[in-house]
Length: 127
Ligand code: SF4
Ligand code: SF4
Image (cartoon, rainbow, N blue to C red; front, side, top):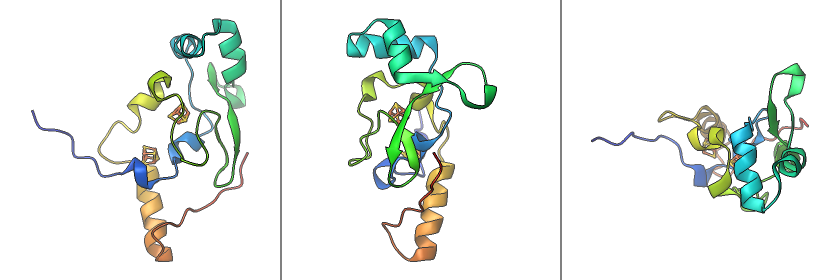
């Protein structure tokens, strides 16, 4: 079976996808988080998630402050840019980007080429 060719490198990215405001946390995701942290589900839901923004249904992961993007998922290590709950991360994090390309990564590479700086991170101030 041929393996999907992947045109992005998460180790060369400051975790753009973890800055997304709407990172869905389903009841099954909350259950997994509760098990991971040894908490009851209600505590895990309240501590780690909040209602989805702009009146959207469901809940999303809470954020923390971040130097690059304003805010990022509370579970991102803002120094290493790695997920601190990798084995317990929500389903949406496991499936993203779902294809061989990552739009965030394409954007990052395009900006780095324009700036002629392989480490450049376009910064945002939202959040
Ligand atoms: S934005 Fe794309 S390249 Fe960056 S960490 Fe997420 S999936 Fe990987
Ligand atoms: S749970 Fe992990 S992979 Fe998912 S958004 Fe948060 S830091 Fe990123």
